[in-house]
Length: 317
Image (cartoon, rainbow, N blue to C red; front, top):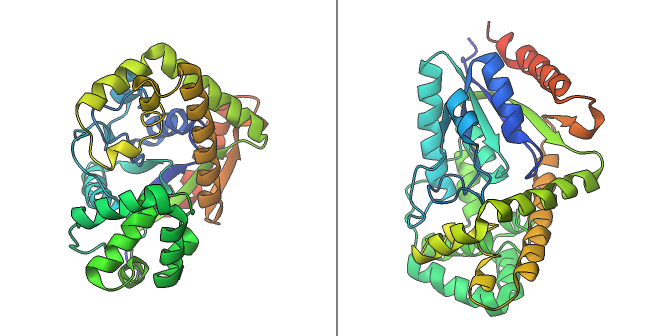
């Protein structure tokens, strides 16, 4: 007998593509609740820079993993997977459909594939040492990772200091590559049956224009003041990685002009969107919807709803 699997809808895509609006509309139509898969929306104090769902969205559909911990706390992919499993169970017990929504591909894949990161505890002293080394020897660390863990190196961008140092930390702490840990855990069957809905733009310049306008809106809404407040809280190393936060700090410290900081933020966000697209394009199960090909947002919602009902709801009826 085939094992019943929990239906999950994953809404993925690059930043500023419209995932929040699409997921809220779909969750309303299909009686769902949303688990955020944005690595920075979990922090309570990050509001403007993470483009959190607004009050209307949060009131119309129940959200999880949004604003639940302080920026002073560390939060890893392993922490997310544990939390997301609990959230999915709560949603299923309500006879609702769990939506996992966001642009942090590692979080989404690790959760849906049921990756077990074990009970490994972080070696903060080693991590700090590796991070300091990365400031002046980034290329050397990536070469080191290619040597000791080539599988992880192939999946990590050479500029992704955070993941490079985490992979090295794991290897030097436990004596074997983190890719081996992930490989072992994948032997465990996932309890989820997921349908992937991706939102993107055929014309990349349209997405980039949306990113630039979003950053302008963030400045108007008080991004600089938010960063000043968070900086005083001495955020954890994971929170410090937030795009929209780290680019504004040099301006606050008098190291560059506001215009320079804003241009750096727009550039870094565009680069991040490009990395997100590259990550998700590897998943051949994603049903892509290109927003700039639709005459109306409502039509895209209806088409996505059809795919979900065909792939999950009808399949489990």
